[in-house]
Image (cartoon, rainbow, N blue to C red; front, side):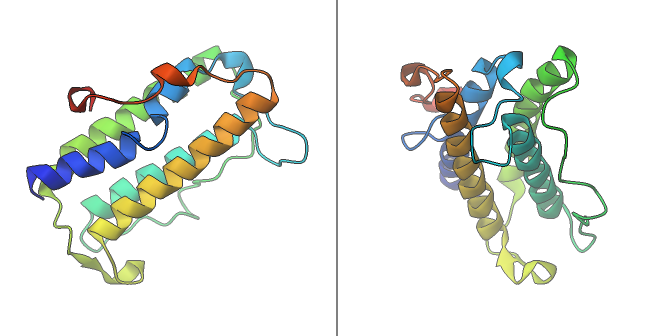
Length: 167
């Protein structure tokens, strides 16, 4: 992938000019809020985050693989716990978003955007990156709604990436 495409996907994944940066949002959520949900909604912030991370890692694994694709059912990419077990688990989850983006930074330059994955409904690597971007953006909106419903709305002014150097 050329440098311009790498930068474009980094911008999309980190929400540059379009939505709050997942890294900045997750870094600002406190431990007490991690298990929060809202009336009529079945999932907590923790459950959404674990699901989102699971699918990010699954996508990264798919993009790294040739034909040996991970099985999402076997690898347990869904979580039932409503909240982290303790503050250490929450801190680990906050670090994990950084690990995900570091892994993406490592593999993006070598990705053939047009490579088709037959086992993935003929999606290309570019399709997989777009799916990861929109999936993450969707779930970040859910997390922000839960925070707002619980009186913990984050100050939006410092949650956006404005400089490519931050990526």
